[in-house]
Image 1 (cartoon, rainbow, N blue to C red):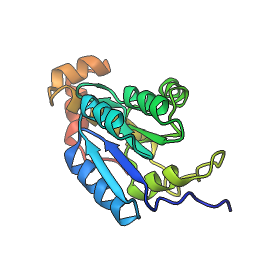
Image 2: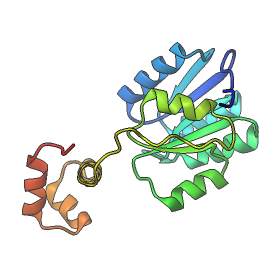
Image 3: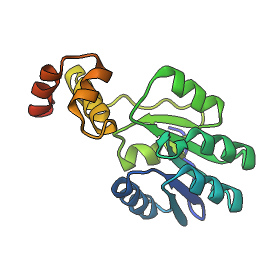
Length: 182
């Protein structure tokens, strides 16, 4: 097995607009040995931190309230080419993954990703393949997660969510009333 990078004495920037997730991930990364863990909730705040003191590592959510997290990845890549950035997103698709890597991301993870998976991605040797998940989500669960994300993006408006998902409003209401599939 290849040797992992050391994070001792290294700085990490975490950019996410979900404050509880941001705080949990920051605590988890501090406990894994990062010397400095900084956080930002907006693209503007993150870009300023990269400009003032570029971190060695970054975990960046792709969709933020004030823009696209890929702008942060691109700026970090230009400012400090040896830095490693991981892109997190709940809207994973091949096109955005390719764009993220072209702009300088080291890896691309779909949410929900736990702290262990994020840490492994940050310290992995270049060219290593990620392990397959032991318990991947079922197709029903992936569909349910997508519906929940769109529902939240529409500020919990059932009619708007149904329109965007191209489904009948009553069908959506039945899905939302049920528990999440496994």
